[in-house]
Amino acid sequence: MCGIVGYIGEQPAYDVLIKGLHRLEYRGYDSAGVALLSPDGELNIYKTRGKVDDLERFCESKDVSGNVGIAHTRWATHGEPNDVNAHPHFSCSGRLALVHNGTIENYNVLKTALELQGCTFRSETDTEVLVQLIEYVKETNDCSLVDAVREALKEVIGAYAIAVIDVNDPDMIIGARKSSPLVIGIGDNETFLASDATPIIEFTNKVVYLNDDEIAIIKKGQPLQIISTDNRPAEIDIKTLRMSVSQLEKGGYPHFMLKEIFEQPRTIHDCIRGRVGSKGATVTLSGVIENKDRFLNAHRIIIVACGTSWHAGLIGKRLIQEIARIPVEVEYASEFRYSNPVLTDRDIVIAISQSGETADTLAAIQMARKCGAFVYGICNVVGSSIARATDSGTYIHVGPEIGVASTKAFTGQVTVLSMLALAIGQLKGSVKPGVAEEITSSLRRLPDLIKQALKLNESIEQLSGIYTYVHNFLYLGRGFNYPSALEGALKLKEISYIHAEGYPAAEMKHGPIALIDHELPTVVIAPNDELHEKIISNIQQVKARGGSVIAVVTKGDTTIADIADHILEIPEVAEPLSPVIVSIPLQLLAYHIAIKKGCNVDMPRNLAKSVTVE
Ligand code: G6P
Image (cartoon, rainbow, N blue to C red; front, side, top):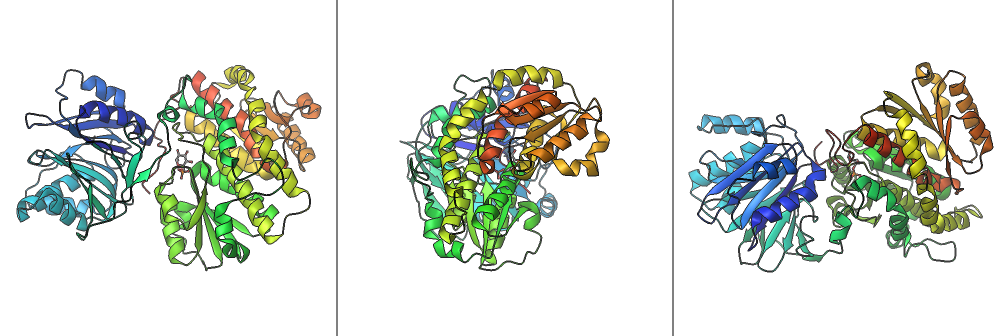
C-alpha cells in the first residue's frame, strides 16, 4: 500500500518520478505528490488528491526542475485522501521532505511530545510525525541527516519504508525500511529507490533489496552505502533482475486486467516450465527436493494467505490432502497471526502471496518460524519480503501482475499447488495409480485448454449486457470448485461493486436460497466431476424459485444446457485442475460487467494491490 519512489542522478528527476509513480499506482491511488530539489536550492513540493494523472495536470505550470527528488502515491490509512494529507510531508522549517509507506503505530504519542516542543502539524497523517521528529532530532543534536534519521527511527513503532531529502544536503537521499519494502536501483551515475522494482527496471536491472532496520545513504556520484539502525555497515548484495519493461505495459489491451487474463496460456506455460517434463509423470520442485525430510515427516500443513491467494489456498488444501495425504488447514493470515496457534517443528506453514509483501502474511510467517515450523512460500514477486522471509518455496513465475484484481496469479498459484501436491505425494509414495499421469498430462495441456476457454470472451461480453445493473449475484460451486465460486464472487465485487456471494452449492438451502428471485442471478460452476448430478439438483432448486442461472459447464453438457438460462462451455479437464479453467469465464464475466458499468477495472475504488498495512 502506497508507493514511494526516489531519484538522484543526471536526468530530470520529475520525469523519472512521474513514470515511477504510474508504475506504482497499483499500490494506491488516493493522492499523489512529488518533492524536488531545484538547481537554485529550492525544495518544491507539489501534491494533490487523486491519481498520478491529476498530479501531472497540477504540475503543468510549475517549476519541476532538478535532478533529485522523491514521490508518493497514497492509499489512505490515517486521514482522508485530500491535498494536505497527501505525501510528501515536510518539516516545520520546510527544509526536509519525506515520503512513507507503512503505518506508525505510536504516532499519537510522538505527535503530542513534538507539539509540546513547539512543532505545528498540518496534516492528520501518521507520516508527518516522522519528518517532524527527524528535524527535531537533527536540530536538537546538531547532527547530520543520516544520524537524525537513525536516532529518530529508534523512537518509532510500526512499519515504514521512507525516503527523505534535505534542502541543506541537496545531493543526497536517505532511505530506510522496517516491514515495508524498499528496493534501490543502481545505474550509471544515478540511483533509484522504490517500493518495488517496476519504476527502476527501465533504467537498470541492478538492484539491492534493503533489509529491515537498514538505512541507505544515496549520494550523487558516490557508491551506495547501507548502515544498520545501530550504525554498523551492512552488506550490499546487488541482484540482477530478469523483468522486462514490456511486461509492465498494456501491450495493446485496453486494461492490464484484460491483458493479464489473456496472458494466461503463456504464464501457465512459464509456471510449469522445468517442473513438468514433456514426457513422464513426475514433477520436479527444487524446494521439495531440498527439504525432503521436512515434507516426509510433516504431521500437518497450514496454509496462510489473504484475499485471492487464500482462495487458491482452499484449492491447495484439497489437492494436498487428496494427493499427498497430509492433513491441511487454511487460515486467513490476519486471523492466524493472532490465534496463538499450536505449532511444532513437524508442521509446515505454506504462505501464498502474489506480491510477497502482504503485511499479515509476512507477520504470520515470522510467528510460525519463531514457533519452529518450517515455512514454504508460494510467491510471484521475485525477491519480495515474503519470498525472503520463508525457509524455501516455489515461485509461480507469471510475471508482474498490475491489475488490482488478481487473475493470472490465481491460476499460477493453483498450478503450483497442484505440482506441490504431486511432488510431496510422489516423495511419500501416496499418489494413487493413474493420478500422477492424469495431473501431469493435464498440466501440459493447461495452456491450450486456457486458450480454448478464452474463446468465450465475445459471448461473455454480450452476456454481461444482460446483468450489468443487477445489485446482487450468487456464485455456487462444489468440491474443488467451491473456492472457485468464492473467487468468482470476489472478482465481481472487487471491480464492479456489485455485491456477490460465493457459497458451497449444497449449503445454499441453509440460507441463501431465501434470497433467490427473478432479480438474483446465480452463477453455478458445474463442470463434469464426481458431484455433477448433485449440482444439477442445486440448479433445479434455483430455477424452481424463479432465479436465473449462468452455468459454467463442460463442453457438450446437454443436461444443464436444457435447464440453465445461459451456459459457458469450458473444455474437459482433470477435476483437480478444473479451477484453473473455470476461472477464465469467471474473470471475463467480472471484467465485462465492470466495463459495461463504466468502472475502472485496473484501479477499483478503495482497493490496493499490495496490502502492507494490517
Ligand atoms: C489485496 C489484493 C488481492 C490479493 C490480496 C492478497 O487485497 O487486491 O488481489 O489477493 O491483497 O495479496 P497477496 O499479494 O498476498 O497475494
